[in-house]
Image (spheres, helix red, strand yellow):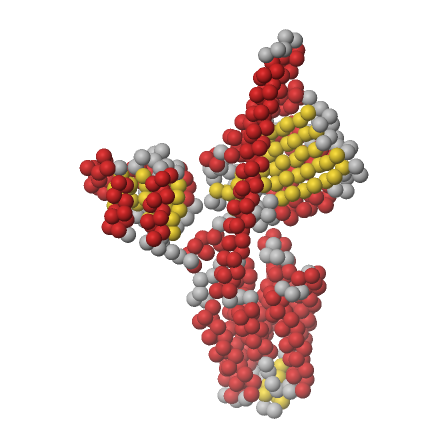
Length: 588
């Protein structure tokens, strides 16, 4: 009966854990999903174990088919627990690399199902020890072998990442190994004491208090988010500093060349200077229009490919490959912004081939000096603009060749695309491929002084976790849309005093984008004097039948007389800007 008491007590703790864990709001992650399956498989095994005890207490014989079948169902619960616990440890060891995890699950699930079938087919026998029925036989041996293999796989993954041994996420693994050793000893000394499922429940319980507590995970994510925000602000400042200098440089050169042309009478020299001005103006246009202009960063323009990839890993792979081929007198540098999202959606294979080909060209024509790859990013909600810059101190090329390349506007031929697989393609082909990806390309070069290639490609990012965080920290959030910065500052302060979180925007399309990507707001306040009239924006918003957010129009004093018409047109309320304080009190 001791085993029965163990089972009942463990089941009570498990039910308590379920009541605590499942109702809590959680950040969606693969770890959470697997942990939920672990809890449910433990519950399944516990209920079956209780049922088996009921059969025994009712005097059912050990050779009874119902009892034997019940024991096999119990074994299924044990196998499911150890299998999913192994997958959990592998996910941790691979730092939540979904691609690798999915491959492992696809390959291992067949083995798991095969083991279940073998256990179902193979016979089991039952011994009675101190009034308890103890299963043994081929089916039980398969369970022991499978469990040992799973533990060896987990230990292999752990030792492969031994440098992370202090990671608290490995605590359940340490505990399982220790408990498994203790379990073997106890079963040898007291064969009638069946505590396998109790051990599984204990490890599951410890997982909650060490790594799977939703509150702790949420706080961890918030701290991570705060660090990223601080880092983002710093990187934005650095990026703007670099970008402003990159804009100033061609302007300065154009001014210098313009001054020099006044005294030039040689027509050939004059033509060369005009070509250089043309080249510099293209560089300037690229920087302003294709990099800095955030209005072009729209989900509509992105060629979305549902291939999730890790950009830092991709770049590290390229770095290792290419540095072997760099000449001894060349310094190879790779700088990637720490603010780049962990995962992006896009054609990772084509992106890798493009960057690889640009680096191959730089390596080919650079015998001394440096080759440098820089990757920065700009965010806009669920979109990310990658700015890839490859500079070298190699042979360079003439202005004529650069201008011809910049003027190139031909479609990518099939034979050129096939050559990309080999990495042996010229700059012309690279430019065509970047255009095919929906990106932008520019080049700056000078004979004897090297080449700099800039590529801009927009990719989609996953914002699911951010939305979950917003819901967890739910605080009434207001979107204020106005291009009057002084007014925005005033209304923001008043709304924040009311305990509201305030987001601002200066463009109508920006408001539409935010709603389109499912940003949540309690209210939207739109200035009627935005770049689009407020009613026009409201009509666009209401094209989505699920749109239910109250929209308040903000009016100047001279349009107050038609305020009721706005309510009739569908606005939930109006706000007179000249009476801001009293209007905020009235509405909020």
